[in-house]
Length: 487
Image 1 (cartoon, rainbow, N blue to C red):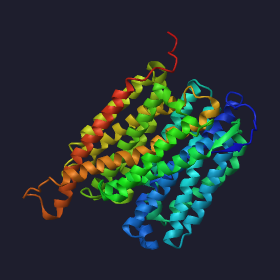
Image 2: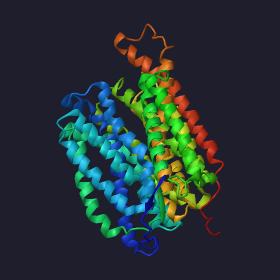
Image 3: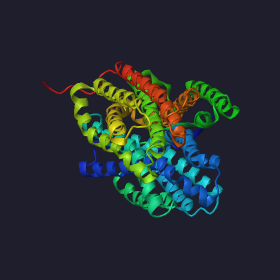
Image 4: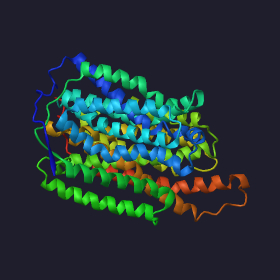
């Protein structure tokens, strides 16, 4: 089943034709948007208690405040990328920003719980139209070479650090002003982008032909069901019907999606993307790296606000270590990729992730921030930069210009699936480990719960370490794509 897309060609991709200053401004706009969307994944988290109190959410209802955004984003990401290829990347970028901005404004005034949930879902829809087209626009604006590597590194740093900034910004806004400002803060940024983007970002060539409706429907429903089931597994357990049934249905729809894509004239996710070894490695890294990072953040947030007694604002500041390490090291790895290639940079980054998570297995009730947490957070930031910069570049390397959106949306979908998939595994490990822990007699009664929590984190971080080893192993299969510098 397909829908004719207007066979309009708006001209060549403006890659090397635009002046450097104009291209630099376009990149700045795209990076700001990526930062805003990634921040929004986490900014609401620290404001949840205030939101629940004002709008009357139950604990399960609060979970939906987070899941509504994630489900819409994950479920529609592939669709957003292909729509950009078909109807114009800048057009979809602007439509998504407009929807995201309006949803943020209306959501900030929400008087009822259902109102706020609808706005969070609409934010996710807007983000799904924007995110894949961000990378697609970068691939169009910058031809393959050092400038594209630098642009992708800047983009990856913004996306990766956004979650950390979101935790801090959410704490600042909800503590200093009101939880409503975690929504309102997006409005001026969105309006500025809507004014500036048409001036500095040119429209790219559109794909002629038919739009893959069957692929869009099966992918959207399949990914949404998988994300829902995996996100729900941590709190409900794997044996719960509301967990395994969505996962089974999602898997069945995903198989149907693959069969549809094999026959589609212009698939929403070209299966040829998986024929490139480097690109498959990039997808694996996206899932495992983002998953271990989110799992680490989840565990450490509980430890910081539990045994260490940090408030949400101080917790946000604590995680800035990861953000600073990521941003500062990104510049180093851009040059290192040119010298030694993607394989060894990614391998070094994976070893950093292994070291950071292995260090955290020593966490105990007596651990402090500077002695046990600061170092692993710094290693995680460096490791994320070293693994995700090459992965992001490889995800778009060698892709035909008419498939930039599809390549970008596939990679971004892997990034979105990594969080709930790995977090569900890590929470299951933590829950299982906690059942076998006996509290020693010398632990004070008011510390018993924290003791069990802390001791059960060890197996969780060990599992994250094993996943990071998996990233290191897959890195060794990377073929060099960047030309070696002249001797």
